[in-house]
Image (cartoon, rainbow, N blue to C red; front, side, top):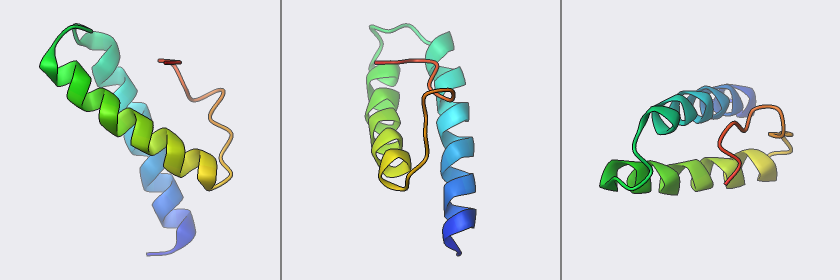
Length: 60
């Protein structure tokens, strides 16, 4: 898998995950699990040089 493909998949997953998080109860275990992945994806995308300012709808 090329770096571009990996970035594309990560951006798509980040966007999809945020949609799920916005529809979930913030006090639920599911939300807490999703938040861990959200943070991981933010780190991956930021380290890869992606400006996530416009993509980040959760901002936690």
